[in-house]
Length: 308
Length: 269
Image 1 (spheres, rainbow over the protein chains, first blue to last red):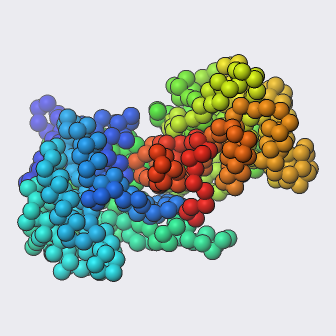
Image 2 (cartoon, chains in turn blue, brown):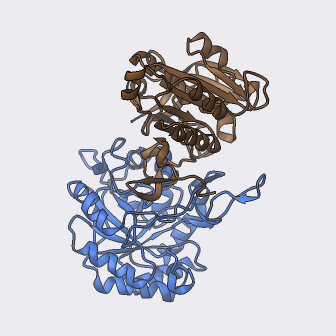
Image 3 (cartoon, rainbow over the protein chains, first blue to last red):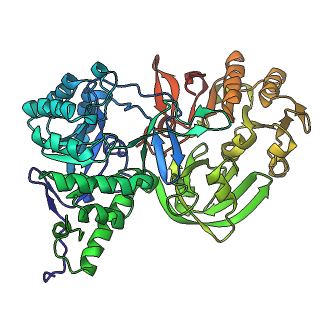
């Protein structure tokens, strides 16, 4: 231990330094200020703003949510305000925050991803983009680019050619070979990958025989998916050299530690924050406590130390 | 809005599937307004995962009441709680009732506002009635349910001086028929100044229509499945028409109390 007893929780992703490895996940943290009554965002490693398409997006009809054992199925449909309203109304209020601001970027086709990034590039106050390659592609019959290495490469390369900022590619767990998609993103120039997004899922009301979310299918998140997400993060981290950011059902410091030990450089907390808005802070405190108990000066020394 | 991870339960009453809990939470009680709600964790750990949205039913000295009907896994667990146990609560959340709704007109005619509660929808209207009483504004309370067992608070409300007019769909107590039919006859018999309503969606739609036909402003407390309760997840939307434009609006943030004229009915499953 160093003399002061302080633990270094910081993480250097190469393209971005974080004060700690805990980020709030896209889609569960609004546009960055919804949690302000509960936590000081400056205590977080950073946060990822809700996915933005170029134009405002109406989203799906309700019901949009249903609960399953230790899980949440959502089909919000990426309702959002679009880039112009975000840059005018939300971004100015995020600029003063002493934390990493990452914007999740969506697109109905490759051109839209590029348009969103070019628009955001014209505004200050963003540290990196997270590319949501789980968006249905209108030119590919609704298939997401993240389901195949070829389409992943196409979107990532197109965005990287134009973006002045680092790009984190957020992977779908619904691809047949997620580690292969991570490798494709790396080849196309992605600066990091984050995984996993939600698992395609459904639930049925047996009394009415109707789907429990109006969209029929939704994305499953929460503790239910954590062991599968962890396995995928381990596989991806074993395959690529770029930093891996792990997420999927993380609710406690112990959960976060599993991902870090399995090879993640940082983690994201999503669904847990909807239930307990202070959970990210409790995780950060828990990581520090873990380092003290284990005599670790630097949390980042723990990354990828799985004894397999 | 505040988090209280250990609000002590100080009192419990139960009538069949209906439960009333009094929670000690001075910080939240102090700032709560009628129509606002709490997000309540029904069990520690991940099952059930999400908090449940529950209207604030009444306010005491440093305490809050919640009143609910057992409707699923979460409320069933909540119904098993006993005094001296604690609940993890978050609140007060959302926008509540406008206590001045239609009040200017009321000053001229002394016409009361009317609050209509269907079944568990009585929950936020008792807090509303209490605050209206404090403000010196007359309020007529209508309380309906399918059958006698669905209006368990009738004696308690009568004892508290709210003189509820009751209805049951099957005629087992009070006016026979829908509580919105009772509303219709109530405002036909005596002038009213505004309509407040909480209950199942078809009841809300009928209440808004009855109010509109009588030329009265209305406010409705909408119900929605919620993920977070504070605007982050966009899960709890209802179709509303605001500034001439229809969109999916977050019930937790723009509601749960909305203007009856803004609601678009029959959209979504």
